[in-house]
Amino acid sequence: MRLFGFKRTFLAAALALGLAFAIAAPQAAMAQQTPADEAALLQQLKGGPVTGRVSIPDAKSGVLIQPQGRDWRQVSQGTVKSVGGWLLAITVIALAAFMAIRGRIKVEHGMSGRTIERFKGIERFAHWLTAICFVILGLSGLNVSFGRSLLLPIMSPEAFTAMSAFGKLAHNFLSFPFVLGVFLMAVLWIRHNIFNAIDMEWFRQGGGLLQKGVHPPAGKFNGGQKIIFWLVVLGALALAVSGYILMFPFYGTDIAGMQLAQLVHAIAGIVMVAVILAHIYIGSIGMEGAFDAMGSGQVDVNWAREHHSLWVKDVTARGAGDD
Amino acid sequence: MARMKFLCDSERCIECNACVTACKNENEVPWGINRRRVVTLNDGAKGERSISMACMHCEDAPCMAVCPVDCFYKTEEGVVLHSKDLCIGCGYCFYACPFGAPQYPQVGNFGSRGKMDKCTFCAGGPEADNTKEEYAKYGANRLAEGKLPLCAEMCSTKALLAGDGDVIAQIYKERVSRRGYGSGAWGWATAYKTGA
Image (cartoon, rainbow over all chains, first blue to last red; front, side):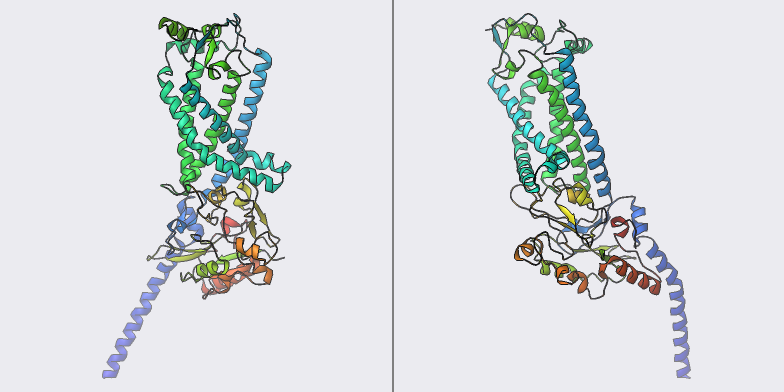
């Protein structure tokens, strides 16, 4: 009897176990279908990264698959490069066309021979510190974006790498004096760069750029220069924030943050190169007498009266800077 | 010629990390870099799976496409390799790679990246096969010796397979049909135009 009792218990247990398996089996199958299956998981995450736990100390390697890398490739190598390349090409063509049609903007009343101080030493220092850094940063940055297509075919791979590696070093280190230069310019000039009604009139007259003999009144900086000022300050801010994120990988960011930073950096960089090309043109070959402002700091009085009439009045009224 | 691929059968991977260790040892991988890693999904929960992941040697390799100095190349066997002499350590391949394969030793100032390092499918680099120079930069070149990558060769449960893509896909398919289930060949849909 005892044996029978045991048998019965065993049978019941086996039955119960079998039943449990029968119930558990479809559940297990369902569990496998949802998160543990790659295709389903990728679909569920909607292009987000597949992350898990790793037992090695490198926690960031817990990202198993990051499909957004393909989107980054598409945008940075496709859209940004083609649109950015065209933007730069159009800028150069537009400047050449402007030079061909408008010619060099002359001082209408001729050089007087008398000068007035436009920029002090510290102002010129801030400008040229920024300018020299920007030229090298811009060229080394453009090399990363366009060098493989434009320079590598005409250089040996070793020479191209040597140049690019030096460019990377220069790009990293010169970011610091560049930021310092922009900071100095911002502090020195921000009070002269607040937009006002005079600028609206300046814009209405096209800054006098389009017609000879038109000289809308302007203070220390005209409307166009104020736009350059704000583009430089805000552009440099965007470049510095995104650049330092890239320079210090995984400091407070993840891979998605770095991908975004790279796109911001590339777009801001290309736009700034286009803007500064126009700035360089009008400050050098585009206008007679303009370079002196940042060169010697002393500008001709006639040039100053034509382009910054209100500033000349202001300076002479204070009795400073004349001759 | 065989088209080399890795395949990790996550139903078999027991997260022993022997592949990670074998890779580090065989290739003298630089400090702080793991060419292969095991990631556990749903850790401790229902549907837990571990997957051993390294460079998948993609068909249309994003690293190759985005490299600003064009330092990558592909062998006849489909293995994606790169030249550390040409690499400038910019980080672009890491942003583009879906599998987190490219890694950089931290050298010098800031978080500055050195020459990129990644899984070579135990196939060395551009230097002459099995030379000291090749070993110092890229690690072992087992393919040149007629051997497959060590991570897969010594996998105790044969979860990690390496070799001709068609052959290992066939092995995996047979396993799935015999078992009646499988969670997919992880990464294949992303790395190759035709999945497993």
